Length: 96
Image (tube, rainbow, N blue to C red; front, side, top):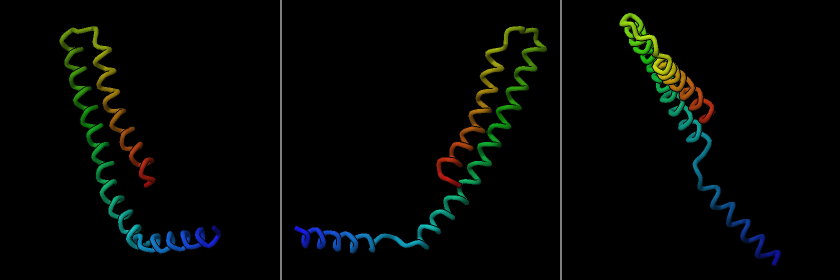
């Protein structure tokens, strides 16, 4: 029984040596980080655009005399916050 267990462990180590090496893993992490930072910057740009559009629409509604626009303020605000937090969540998820 012990010999069978030893042989199985030896075969498992042979299979593990066929996995990609450290250099391939570092290369994959470098590619992911270069792509991720452009996606993170994109999420911040989208959040800024949402904030500007929301501020413009709310200002327009205020000038037109609408007094009940708290739901619209919350909707635009939370949309922009969501985009900022989505980028931060992706950064934490991938560990970059």
